[in-house]
Image (cartoon, rainbow, N blue to C red; front, side, top):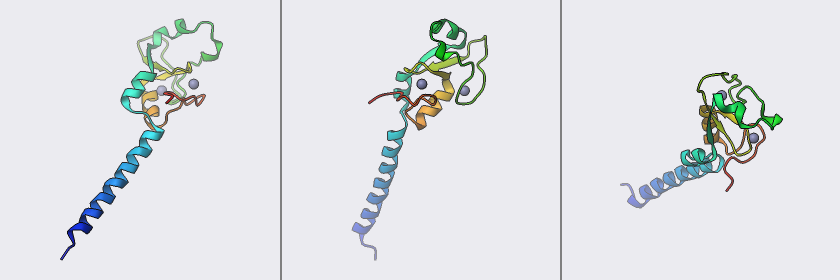
Amino acid sequence: MKNPSNVFCFILKQQLLELADKIGYVNTGLKEEEISRCISKIKGSMKNDLAPNKPMHVDNKCSICQEEYEDEGDEEMGKLCCGHSFHIQCIKQWLLQKNACPVCKTEASPR
Ligand SMILES: [Zn+2]
Ligand SMILES: [Zn+2]
């Protein structure tokens, strides 16, 4: 006959393991709402107007997927507080995994 308290212990252990997984996840990546807070959305067609005096950000391609931005069109891009910008979908995926700019490693959402 099974000892019910052992079963309970087993379940508790499983839950703790799951919790540990979640905590680990949160420590390295960001949550959706944090991501939307630290990305400023810009349209691809606006990118040349944004920082005409900052020669450091004239990258024409997304450093995450290595695809060039479309010159015209309304491609949506996300700009981090460090000034680097990427395809909005690329940087969102990235920040889910890691709270850092792929280029300069600046924390995207300092805490
Ligand atoms: Zn991209
Ligand atoms: Zn950066």
